[in-house]
Structure formats: structure tokens, C-alpha cells
Image (tube, rainbow, N blue to C red; front, top):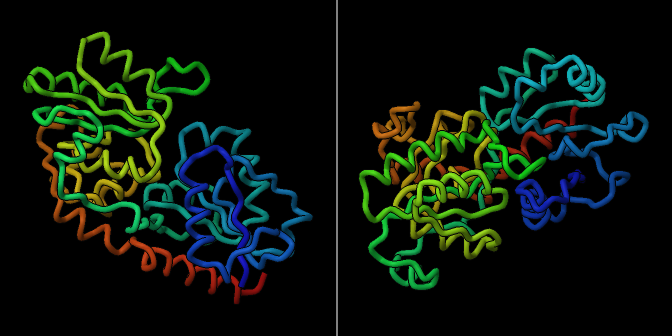
Length: 308
């Protein structure tokens, strides 16, 4: 069985997943569509679904999340055209599955992505890490590493990520903690930075970090906040869980699969949520490589042995 995985080529997480699959499943990976038994469309937004090319291949299509705009007439027509080629769908959570069932009768598999335990792990010496980032040891560090700003203008908030909610929480925390400092990472953070500047709230922004340094950054946080309205993952929930970073989250994506109920909040009552590091760590272990890839392999093997 040979699997071809398409690429986003935009330095986003799906390219990392492709590379991790390639490294851990060398005998079941190919760089060429023509040699593949199965083509995994992990980045559907860059997929040219030429029916002639894919007619004799088994097709797996990952849907990361569905927004209301995905149910517009034009997008449904495009979906139906692609649906003719797809054999099975892969989604990350039950909510996306329920949405997808409204527009396809093809099989849908719910399975969060895996996580590499060699790259995401707890580091005990927090002071050494704070020295590494030149951060004062007395600061209460609140982290957010997700994009919050629309790429079209680098000003408008990306509302599905909930940056307005994030700022509301940070603003409230800042009124209660004299030593609060916000730690930001990743691209397109212009919206939240402008709000923090407006209210003179301390922050640190480290835009371009490799995975090694990002793992270190998680390990210095006192709290990580997911404030999204809609998510497939987010993968930060897994990263926090494996690094034993205290985290609270809205009820999106995989939050209920990993976090305890007491760590999940609804706005504006974020303050009722409590990080539960032990439960999150226990739940994320089943998604570590190699165990986290095993169920994918089983799905692909069953598909490979089925008639086209």
C-alpha cells in the first residue's frame, strides 16, 4: 500500500503532518500520484480534483472544519463535484462529522491528528527557560500562539478564532494581576497586539520560532487560552497537554476529547474554568506517535482492500 499526501506549501501545520507521516511510514509513502494506491487530500483548499487523474485511485479527503460560508450554493456545487471522486472523508471531531453528513453519504471517519512526543514534552527547569527568553521570573505568563488576524488586510480580526474574546479575558485578568504579561507567537497577530497596545498591557511577541523553541515557550506559561468560536483542532490543545501547560478552552474541536469538563468554558464565564493538567496529559497520550498513527493506518488498509 502506497499513500500520496498533497501539500499546502504554506508553512502551516498540515505540511508538518505530511512530513511526520513520511518519516514514520516510509514503506507506505510515495511522492508520486501515479504510484499511489491511496491519495490523501490533507489540504483540500489546494486540490485540483481532475477526475481523470483520480478515477482509479482511492481518495481520502480531510475536512478540518466547516464554516457557514461552506454551505453557500457555489461551494456546495464544488463540494458535490469533488464528492464524486472521494471514497471516504476524515474529520477531526464529531461536530464536523455531523455537519458533513448533511451534504454527503460517503463514510466519515472521526480521528484527531497524532502528536510527536519527541518534539512536545515537559521541561522541569522553568527558570532556565525564562532566562533563555529573557523574561522576568515574577511575571504571570498568559499564552496564545494562534493566528487572530485576517490575511486579506492584516487588521481585521479573524472572528472564528475569537481574538475579541481573548482580549476580553486578558483585559479582565490584567485588572486582577499586576504582574500579567501576554506571550504571543505565530504569524498574523496584528489584531491582538493592537488591542494590547491600546490598553497598555504588557506583551512579548516571538513570531518565528522553530518547534524546539515553541516547546520551550509552552513550558514557561502559567496559562494558555483557546478562545475560538470554531476549530477543527486546535493542535495547541494537544501541545499544551503533552507539555503539561495549564490550559482552558472554549468547547471547540477536540477540546472535549482531551480536556476535562472543568477546563472548558463559555463566555463570559471564563473564570469558572480551571486547568486540569493531569487529565489533559493522560488523554493526549493515546495520540502520541506511533499509537496516534495506528488508527490512520488501519483506516487506509481497510480502504485499500475495498473495491473502488
